[in-house]
Length: 74
Image (cartoon, rainbow, N blue to C red; front, top):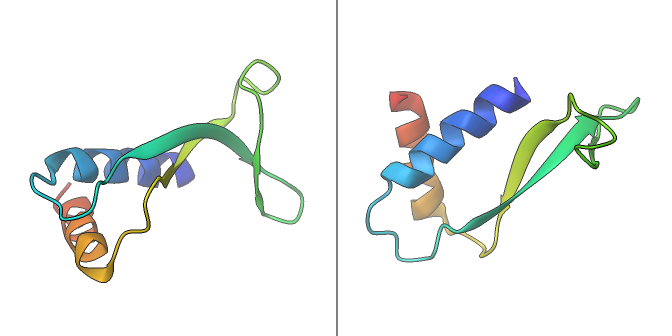
């Protein structure tokens, strides 16, 4: 589910043509630990780790609404 959401969000961000705030994001790989929390790991140590990302800037509600709408579209 994490990987599918990541892929949908990545496509949605690329479809967002003129955001007021930069939608630049940084990617990392992670696993879910025993407490079901996301834990950043090295892809070399965990080849099955799933890509995740975070936005460099804090997006406002309008940008998030547009990204979510595009995720629904895809």
